[in-house]
Amino acid sequence: MSSSPAEAGPELTPASVSTLMPLAVSLGVEFTSIDPAGVRATMPWKAENLTMVGTLHGGALMGMADSAGAACAFFNLPPATTTITIESKTNFFRGVSSGAVHSVTRALHVGRTIIVVQTDIVDDNGRHVSQTTQTQTVTSTS
View 1 (cartoon, rainbow, N blue to C red):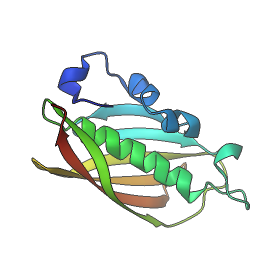
View 2 (view 1 turned 30 degrees about the vertical axis):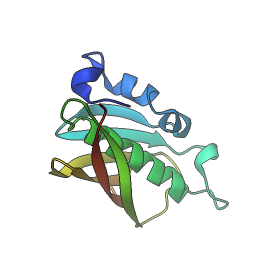
View 3 (view 1 turned 45 degrees about the vertical axis):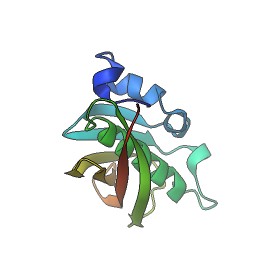
View 4 (view 1 turned 90 degrees about the horizontal axis):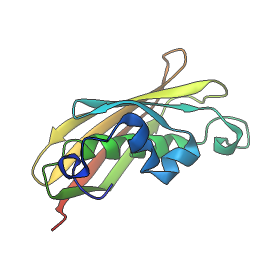
């Protein structure tokens, strides 16, 4: 995603945003809703995303959170700008050994130079799996 949503056109849908992020596709992240107010996504437990003990790898969870965070920041950008993650912190609360995980991302701060987003990931039973807070810098594309 290299420009603001205003420049990207009206064709952006949850499915099309997924395809713009190859890592999200590899992880199996599917966006279910996406707009400036928040982003929702899901990711299945699958063999390619596991640790040696069969739980979802923290890197997969962080990849999901970073993808959702980037999408949330992107949809809060003014025209002629883009966003880049400059800081990310994740707390892990429990392992996931089956099913899927579901994320909700919301903007905590939308400013001229930075956007801060928070992603909460839960398992199929609604139990908190992780929480990621990211700072995204806003830069000009011109």
